[in-house]
Length: 134
Image 1 (cartoon, rainbow, N blue to C red):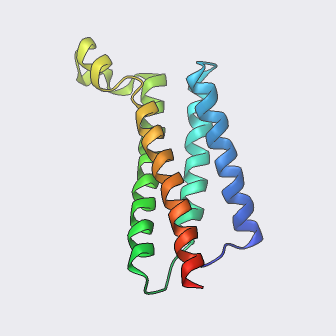
Image 2 (cartoon, rainbow, N blue to C red):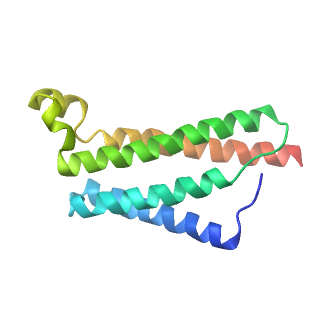
């Protein structure tokens, strides 16, 4: 697994912290119009640095786990868009009120939960596979 430089590691860490602050404050409904953008900025930084971390080996398990990790990165980004939609009600005009609340409103929490679980699983499994490999 290609290691990140110190600057990239710092950007990765800052992205994770911004994601945590943005998601936490949006969940508590504290100025969710502002903190959705904090989350989106953090997720873009986090995902950009995670994409930079490549695996060039031949282990098929690690390659599969990297693909799952990239899927969770997509979920992080879509959760940010859904969080902004919840704050600003962008897509409400396309649905009736009941349908919007049922299928769109506050669904970023579910997307974020799935992404976080996938990240935890793949991070743990990749580290175990790399230990076996070395």
